[in-house]
Length: 329
Image 1 (cartoon, one colour):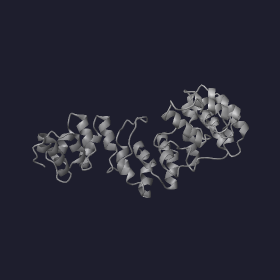
Image 2: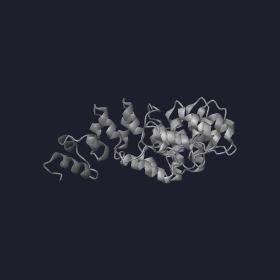
Image 3: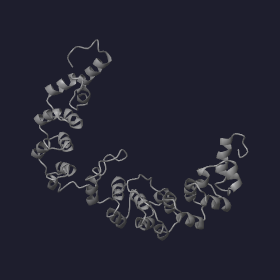
Image 4: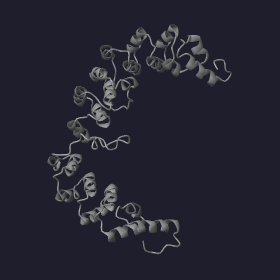
């Protein structure tokens, strides 16, 4: 395959071959190999030095991720003018934390980064986690925070990290995340597709002493008061009239909500509140029938847990054979 007449086959074969055998500059240039070669292949010294001086920063950046790069060339790239190249060098696993701290990087907290694979591979090594949790590099610490379990001292250190994304990753991934930090993340994080129940669904999330948040100016904190075992139906009713839609939504999902309030919330200005009210178990049967007959509300009402099996079968018949169905649901 190294001599295959079809260029794409030949290139793939070369990339595999030169994972073990150093690639000369002549091969790199003759096949017009791109950044994949610089990132994944063993390069002869002459080729690596050429790429380290290349005018194109993307070529230098790819070289910075090469695990086989000689240390002196890595140091040259770390002193270069391009911040993206320096950042790539700063995430290399072969650096000491002192060397990593000496590299000037411009870290944008809001930019999404994937966890570093080499840090993830060390998640089960307590010593490595202690060392890396103290790193000056935010991406290294974020990658540590993705571990399922961490030693108590590492958790305590990361829970007080200046980078709140570290807190977020602890809240999403680490089963040892402390209650106080989880409560802090809850104030500003609404969940993700990968972890929709975090941090609220964590076993460590506070479940008591939450009534003190009933009057909190932050509506996310007010919602938590209904999780307290000592919360009352009166508080549910109060929250069903709260000025914040999410607080009303939380009340609409509470089984203690009165039937009258469930009916009232069917006219709420927010869709998610109306949807929750349409599924409330205390919703009167006559109201549920009205919702089922209304094309705008039938879809929500059809999910109501109180619907008997014969009713659901009748609804399916009306959908499958609309001409044969009677007028009543």
